[in-house]
Image 1 (cartoon, rainbow, N blue to C red):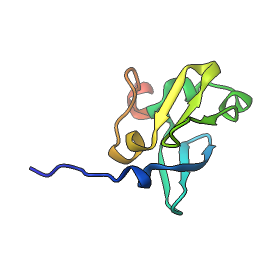
Image 2: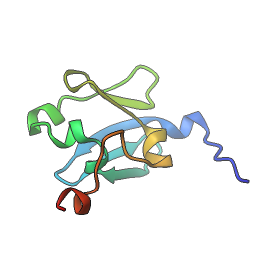
Image 3: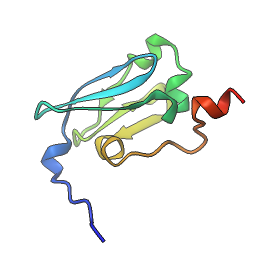
Image 4: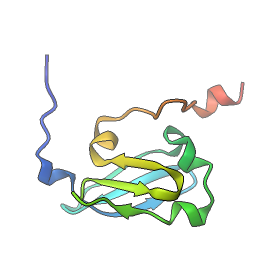
Amino acid sequence: MTILDIDERQLLVAHVEVTNDFIIFDMVDGRRIEAPLWWYPRLRDASPLERADWQILPFGDAVGWEQLDEYISAKALIVGGAAPGAVPPAQAAE
C-alpha cells in the first residue's frame, strides 16, 4: 500500500479561477491544479460574482467562499473526490 505524502509547503495557493467547467488553483510553486466544477455544487450553482468572492485562508493551503459556505483545500484537489451530493453531468442528465 502506498501512502500519499505531501509536503505542506507544496500546498500554498497563490490564485484561484473558477470557470464554467473547472475550479483552478494556481500554486505558489508554479503548478496549476484543476478539478471539474460539478464536484462542488454550491460553487457550480453560484453567480460569477459569488464565484469571484474567494479568499485564501490563513494557512495558505485552502480557499473559502464565505457567502457560499464553501471551503476547498489544495490537498482535496490533489487527492481528488467530489463533495457530498455532487452528481456527474452525465448522470444528472438522465
